[in-house]
Length: 98
Image 1 (cartoon, rainbow, N blue to C red):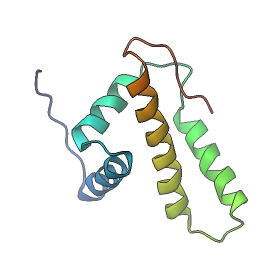
Image 2: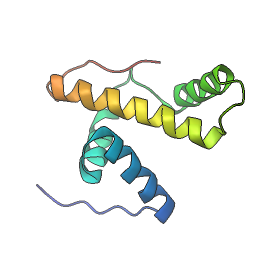
Image 3: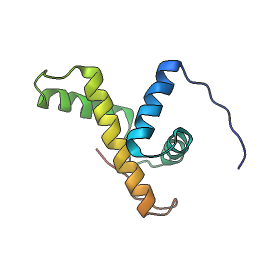
Image 4: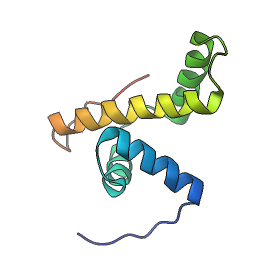
């Protein structure tokens, strides 16, 4: 594989590490999978992600801080994506939609 370098803030790295740990994959695998999944036009986008977070906040009726809800939504998305990728080929057009 050819090496590509990217830079993240300490907070972003901690967030990526947490998501990777929850999904049971390495940080590099998480970043790689997200970079490769981004070509999926029917998939989750930033607007849909924020809508999911808002809907989740409404569902918990303010009992959880927004940051915790964001982490939980990101975990669920990452988990579903990692399970989907393991069961399908990289050229598959199956995408998570919101």
